[in-house]
Length: 156
Image (cartoon, rainbow, N blue to C red):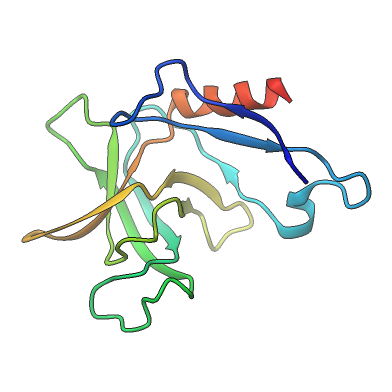
């Protein structure tokens, strides 16, 4: 399978909130990749950063008090997500208490993991260690993310 389409908003630039999407061609014999390996749906929300029972998965190369962090095994964190900047209306990030460090970026944040309808609500972008604890961050998957997916699908 190869990449069919790529889409990113016009304003995409380093240092800002950005989204990108890749659409894969169906294989002539095997069909859709997601039918072979599985896929999650998405939840796109505007100004909704609080999700109960979020699940973050990744392959971190470092972490806190878990010796098995070696980037070779999938690890996870489980907990509620909250607004990362509740007093800053321009901060569209959400955060979760999580000790996964470098290497987990790009992993999904999932809600409803233990139901028949798990959905991606964010993507691990970075982590911070502070006196307040260890946290992971994601941009909220809002209309910009939904438009990116829609654009990528329309190109293919």
